[in-house]
Image (cartoon, rainbow, N blue to C red; front, top):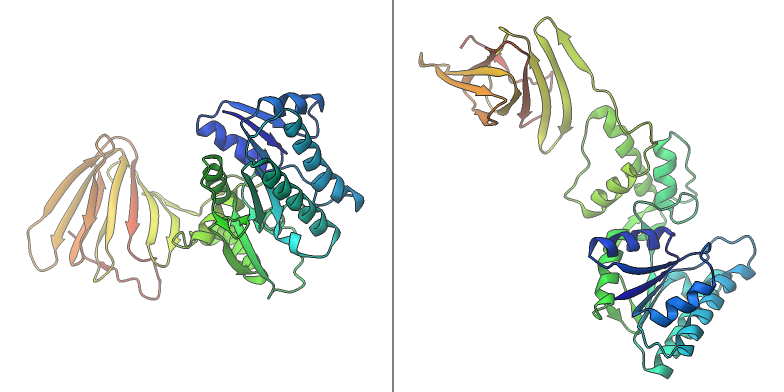
Length: 369
C-alpha cells in the first residue's frame, strides 16, 4: 500500500509512521510543513489510504485555525477528487469540535467537509474526535498537559494547577495507533457518525500531578509504580521519555564494609524488595532465620555455597551455586541460612525478599548454621 500521512512530524504522525514501519508498511508518503507542496499532488495521485493528521492547535493568530484545520483538508480532498482517487481518508478532529470557539469551529468545519466528501463520492471516511492524548514524543506546553507535567516535574520545575478537581479524559498514543491500524484495515470503532478510540482513561488534574510527582520520588524511595493499573503504567512510560538526557541514571545507597556491600534496588509494598549483595572471597553472610520473611537468592557472578539448617535439627543442607549456571534458591522460613563466597572473585547475588525491611519489625534472628 501507498500510505499518505500528513502532519508526519507531529506527535501523532511521528508515532504512526514509526508503527507503520514496524508493521512492514514501506511506501509511506510523509507530508509536513517543510515538504515541497508540489509533492502533495503526486502523493494524492498514488496513495491508497490517507491519514490527515495535519492541523493547528496553538497558532499566533486566530485565522490560522481555519487555515490549518479546514483549508488544508479542503486542498487535500480537492486533489484526491481531481485524480479520481477513492482512497479512504482518516482525519483527526477533537472533542473541542463541540465547542463554540475558533479551534472547535475549525475542527467542526473540517469534519463536515470530510463527511460531505465521503457521501458525495461514496468513499470511506473516518473522523476521530480525539480526547487529550499523551505518550512519548509529545511536546510540553503544546500537545497535552501530561507532556507539560512530565517535562517540568522531571526537571524540578513548577507546574500550574488552577483547579485540581478538573476531570481529564486521556488516550494513550499506543492505543490510538492500534485503532488507526484497525481503520487502515477497514475495521474502525464507530459510535454514531464518528470514530472513537475505545480505550480512554479518566483522572482528575490534581491526582495526575501527584502521580507524576511520585514517579520522580520513586528514584529516592526505590518504589515501582503500580503496573497493574493501566493508566499508571502508560503515564510512567511517558514520564521516562521526558527525562533529561543526562539524567537517565541515578545512584543507589551502597552499604559498604570489609565484607563487601549490600544495596537496595527496588522496594514495593505489595511485591517486596530486591537488593544486590556483594561478598568478598571467604566472607560468610547471613546466619539468621525468619518467621514469615522469605527470600530468593540468585547468584549472577562468582561461586557461593548456600547452607541451611532447620533451627530444631542438626542436619545441614548445602547448595553450591555459581554465576555460570543461573538458578534461584528459595530461602524458607524456620531455617537459619548463610551464603559464603567460596571463589576467588566477588560473589554477586540478587536477593528478593517478600517484604521490605522494617527496622521496627525485622523478623530476623541470628543463629549459626
